[in-house]
Amino acid sequence: MLPFILDRLPNGCERYIEPFLGGGAVYLAIKDRFNECYISDLNPRLMNFYNACGQEVSVANAQPLVESTLRQVNLSLYNTICVYIEAYNKSQDKAKYYNVQRTVVNRNDYAWLEGCEVYFTPTNLIIKPDPERGFKGINVEDATSFYIVNHTCFNGLYRENKKGQFNVPFGKYKHLGELDKTEFEAYCKCFCSSNTTQVHIGCYGYDKSLEHVNDKTFVYLDPPYRPISNTASFTAYQKSGFNDDQQRELKEYCDEVNRRGGKFLLSNSYQEDGFFQELYKDYTIDVIEVMRTISAKGDSRGVTKEILVRNY
Ligand SMILES: C[S@@+](CC[C@H](N)C(=O)[O-])C[C@H]1O[C@@H](n2cnc3c(N)ncnc32)[C@H](O)[C@@H]1O
Image 1 (cartoon, helix red, strand yellow):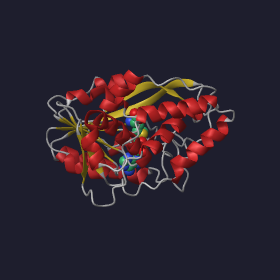
Image 2: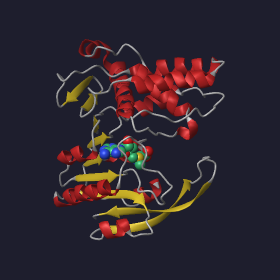
Image 3: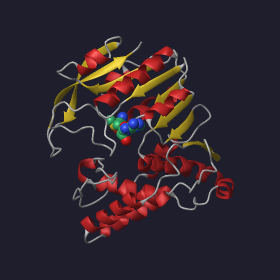
Image 4: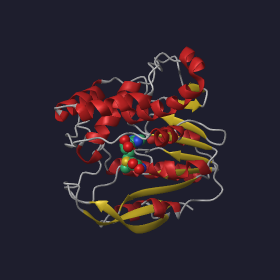
């Protein structure tokens, strides 16, 4: 999908917004083209992980300053992940190790993070909108458990049950590879502001990102896909799901971006019933063919049709 998106990037935008960030493949590929990036997702476990990455850079550069500002920064994310990888590899009962880590991922209370926007510079951390609202500190151990679970669960999937608990089963991996320090440091830098790009990391619903849209903004939207059949359940990333009414609300968000003079590009599944063709008939729709994993076993790939909608 990425090449199709790179082919269609608009010109003249200074601010980038990606409000359904997930794994952030597009953000990581294009962030350096913008002066400011606002990345966000509703998933607090994921955003805690990205916050821990950004903090890793801040801590490395400004230990004394950050220590006086935060309660819990004495752990290095890189070192902690390495310790957990070693523990996993040495574990005689890896399924049990996985289940313990998954319990950690599920037991945490991220209430303080939800609705928050965090902004790291290489020497400090700024939390918006309200740092008094019960800031508990970015949790490096939770971020590590999230990393481990993500790398050892079945097919690297992210899925929640109705109670919001991550419920993907163990992937039965015998061995986890070492984490390359240089690569990880480079990755962490993507979640910290630099001299050329400010990075704002939010944990909130996509609609809140509208407040950042102006006429120099490019918004890339990769919402949970509408299922292509009654049995497919691509929307089940999170307890809240994403039904047709929410797809329609998202179209209103796109209309508002358009009204404000911003540019948007949205990806979704191609629908035989013409749902998106009708919904986005006022915009440009490209139908593209991409390779996707198509079986539940995760070992079978095939060509599937998707759409890219844009207002430019
Ligand atoms: C299709 S995935 C995004 C995939 C991502 N582009 C990638 O490269 O991995 C959809 C993401 O939207 C998030 N999400 C679901 N509902 C949301 C909402 N109402 N507001 C913001 N994010 C939401 C999910 O947590 C998930 O990470």
